[in-house]
Amino acid sequence: MTEPLLEVKGLQAWYGESHVLHGVDLTVHKGETVTLLGRNGAGKTTTLKSIIGVIRKRQGQISLKGTNILPLPLHHVAKRGLGYVPEERGIFASLDVHENLMLPPKVAEGGFSLDEIYTLFPNLAERRRSQGTKLSGGEQQMLAIARILRTGADVLLLDEPTEGLAPVIVQRIGDVIRALKEKGMTILLVEQNFRFARRVADRFYVMEDGHMIDSFRADELAGRMDSLHETLGL
Ligand code: ATP
Image: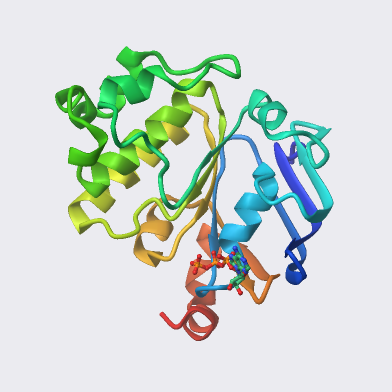
């Protein structure tokens, strides 16, 4: 197999004195969609935040495209093509869709053009003059992903993109992720919605109490269902 695009080894992280990640290992190869599973509080969000560098109190190795990004400031990490869509989405509520899409700086090569964004997200095209506050949860999520694509990121960290969304919208987000995958995007996803995760993921990791306790490919899922039922309470 080729070198992983993103490789995390022995990652530890703290909130103040509280030690939350205890040596997390994971790899994501180019073009893969990898999903982190685990119960509430297992450390999934903390893992994404530690990779992107929002959480600074970390130890271990995080290599992106062969560079150790752990000591780098956030904007240098973004320049290397790593984009993060937080659970709370982070769009500008007082701006309309179009303005939200015009604001993100192009930090890496190959950001999506507005035409490409509106082709991928036709409902954002329809809503281009709607203010952020007027958007549905699904539209906000799509806008949050679209904003990251504008920057030129080609490795996406997505935190629970389907949270709180109606099934038909979850389906749409799944279509978007598959379309991004066809374009060669590399995606690391945190997801509680197991049905959605199994539709999009090539590989899975399972976290518990700040440790990685299992990893397997999508074609090994059937054999894991019993242990997943137990670990995740499915
Ligand atoms: P969830 O789906 O609930 O977000 P998660 O697997 O993403 O779960 P994390 O949010 O990474 O879990 O939380 C891991 C641990 O860190 C939990 O014990 C949580 O209480 C703790 N934690 C999370 N955020 C903070 C914070 N800002 N300060 C202190 N502890 C935190």
